[in-house]
Amino acid sequence: MPLEQISPPAEDAVSLDDMKAHLRVTDASEDAVIAACLAAATRAVEHRGGLALAARGFRLTLDEAPRSVLVLPKSPVFSLDAVEVLDRQGAATSVDAALYDFDSGAPGRLVARGLWPFSLRGLGAVRIDFTAGWTAAADIPEELTLAVKMLAAHFYENRESAGETQIFSTPQAVDALIAPWRSVRL
Image 1 (cartoon, rainbow, N blue to C red):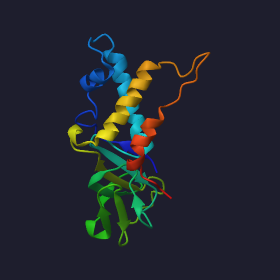
Image 2 (tube, rainbow, N blue to C red):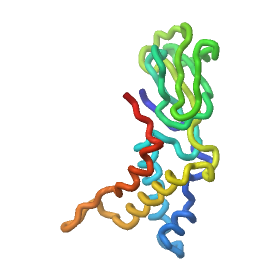
Image 3 (cartoon, helix red, strand yellow):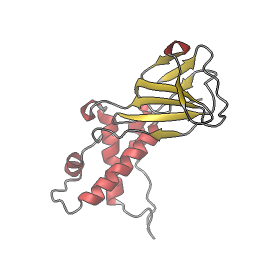
Image 4 (cartoon, rainbow, N blue to C red):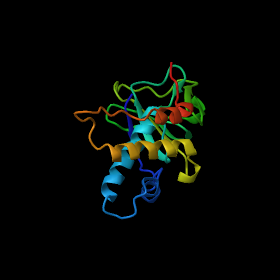
């Protein structure tokens, strides 16, 4: 079930200026390092929670139509942009919206209601494009932006993963802040 990002976010979940204020850094000499720590922390928080913080487009590729409820792997989902079946040559046929039900939110869910167009393609026969994340950085819950800031600060302060006398680990508070938003899959 490969998932790829197909459009970038319009804005970052946490801006470089907000991160610098959190770190109490006033000059620009460390901007590149702080930006790298911020990007890594954002990806880590998103991965741990099954989230997309800043809104962007994703493509989920399946080998066949879902036979039961399909929980989309990023949330919150606010739009289903395309559902397509590919033929052997890669030409896409849109699946009629009457052939599936879609529920937006956290988590986004899709279930087939009828027979979808048949594909002989086998692997990667179905593409589902959706948009997930909060539409504006100001709308992202504060505990999630705080988790990003805390983890980015941890990365910034501990640039090596371990030392001779100390082993570094991720702050437990980050997991506690993400926990209420985490999608649990059984």
